[in-house]
Image 1 (tube, one colour):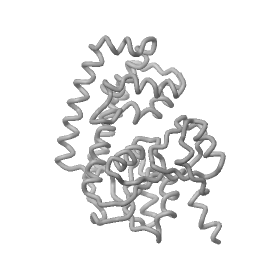
Image 2 (cartoon, helix red, strand yellow; image 1 turned 30 degrees about the vertical axis):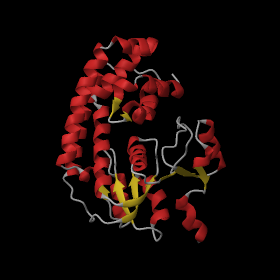
Image 3 (cartoon, helix red, strand yellow; image 1 turned 90 degrees about the vertical axis):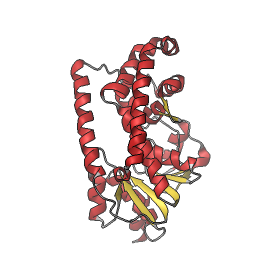
Image 4 (tube, rainbow, N blue to C red; image 1 turned 180 degrees about the horizontal axis):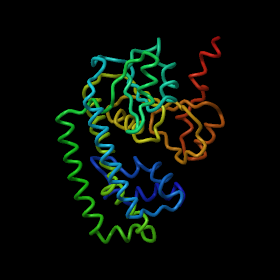
Length: 288
C-alpha cells in the first residue's frame, strides 16, 4: 500500500477516528504507513502482549515527567520552540539565540532523553511538555479515553465500515485495534492534544518553531497554533528522502536546498510554503 492510499483511508474513516476536530489517523499517518502499511505487518498474540507492556512502560515514564516541575517561569515570549532529539535542538537554537525571547518545550520518546541532555549540556533552559499536565487536562483526557472506548465499540459493530474499507477492512481493523485497544496509540495522541491545549492557555507567544511537522508532537503544535491565530515555522533538521508526506502543517517551512524543495513539491507540498535557506546549524561555520 502506498502513502496516498494510507492518507485516503484516513479520510474515509474520519467519522470513526475524529476526536474534537482532530483526525487521529491523519495525525499518526506517517508512523502508521512506515511501520504497518509500507510493508505488510501482521500482529501475533505475542505482539499484542508486547504492545500492552509498552503501554504500561509509557504510562510510567509519562508520570515521571509530569512530576518534574516547570524549570523556568511562565513569561511572555516571542517564540515557543518544540524540540525532540539532539538534531532538532541544534537546528532551532541558531535561529533563536540573540534574536528572540523564547521558551523551549522538549519532548522525547519514553526511552530517550537526548533533547534533555543536549539542552542541559548547552546550558539552555527548557520545560517538559508533560509538565503542563493539570487537573483540567486530566479530566479532558479521561473523557477522551471514554470516547475511545465508545468509538472502538462502534468500529466493531458498524457494518458501514466494512463497506467503506472494502478489501482493506481486515488490515485496517488490525491497525485500529493497535491504536484503540492494545497499544492505545490514539490515547497518547489525545494526551498530546490536551497538553498542548494547556500550553496555549498558559503561554502568551507570537510564533511557534518546530523542526519536524510530520511527527505528531510537531504537527499538533502547528495545528493548535493555527487555531489560535499564531503563525508557525518548520525548520528542516535532517534528510527528507524516505519521508512520504509532502503536507506542510506549519505556515512556512525552511529547507536545506533546492533538492529538498523539489522533493516536497513532488510529494504534494505547496511551493509557496517553502523557503530555501540552507541548514541553520552551519551558519556559525560560515561566519568563521
